[in-house]
Length: 336
Length: 255
Image (tube, rainbow over all chains, first blue to last red; front, side, top):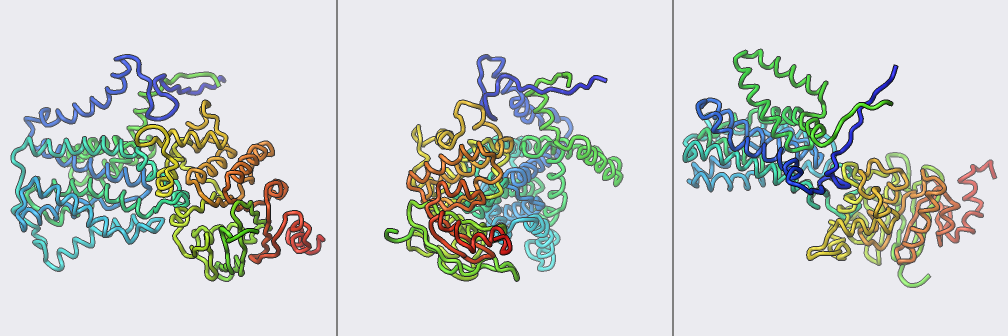
């Protein structure tokens, strides 16, 4: 029997290495710009598409928060080699900080969010510094533990509103602002991070993932690089948390919910790790899916698990890597 | 022997649990030397490199670099001071193309201080400098090799990449941990001139080697270790004639 195999050929645009293209016509420009424009325009149009479905407009906002968390996880896990199981830690800290600024110190919303993002990220980074010089699973364990720890502290000491949370947080001016704040920030972080990881400093972080000993031998303080990476990832996550606090006009211990840790990881699995865009697209699929499945009650967890398992078994590379390959390469069957 | 040694190791000892990996090892290296460290498997060759470059902590003894004590410094600080090292087990940055591997040392504080990476352009272009260094070290600039993912490179090129990573730091001392091991004769023949070139550029080389014939072609002085102890030190031709060195390599009965 004749054996056939699939041959893959790069399209002629790519020059020598990743990220360098030789463009000679509008068609080729469109070929490169197309998917990016599609994403940007699609994302910007979402609130209009769901204009008549107020419930789904709420889902869109949450979906973008998860997209931010997934982006932050993907960056840390696949570009720095730190597995962060604490998305909830970031959202919780960001949310509470913003609420504190807004309610206790009466900062206006649009000042409270950026302040909470930066101070929250600094706070998260400080909490995580002790486990950064270590290699191995310690970082993952500690990040998983922190949200639980802070929930208990808030409950036990009855500080920051205790189990009731901080109420009376200012909301956004109107619905459009509500949508576009988060949409623009997601687009900004997505393209910003894509650029960042290919900058020289981003390459150093990727070096830390591949071989930290060698980075050390190159005269670079690995711990400092990890601190920087954790700070950037925390910025992304804390913004999500701060945004949610103002979206719900409330900051409570549910901001430390385990969902914020797990769904982003699942999104990265589905979307394709290491692509950044995949993380965002993964959460665009998972979050609405879990809303649709709400109709099935608790049975939705089963469906959810089946879908995740299916992806891990059959398409473990993730959607985005698969689609990029289809887009950038010709395939044909040739004889072995 | 002239003046102060560039590197001076005094009575370094290290034990892993009950196993004494290094026992009171001392030696001096002069500027511009090619200093060989030989010894059978498990004699502590790599451990002494790890101790000097700060990757493992010494339990006793001091290390002086240009008269300054560097014992117990963090690895990145030692590299920053001008001591580079290769690793015996090469692990390039797999997810990056070969030339992007050099961006990491070129980005380091040392490379920025020495200004070595400033090539063309107003802000300097690390990519250009990286490809230049790779060309020096034997990657053909116009071939596809420097642009390939470093995980797909053959062993010979990966070893060269390790050396290139050290060169990018513009160090004063390079520790070469078995750069010849696992290479074919023709690949070694290609590496030797690189070593000689580095020596001629005034870089002090300290080479741990199993391939004695190749080592003795370039080394000016050799130290022999066995079971963590220094047996002898001196001219390569004298060291290899030493009875204790022969015993260490061949076993006491073999001689």
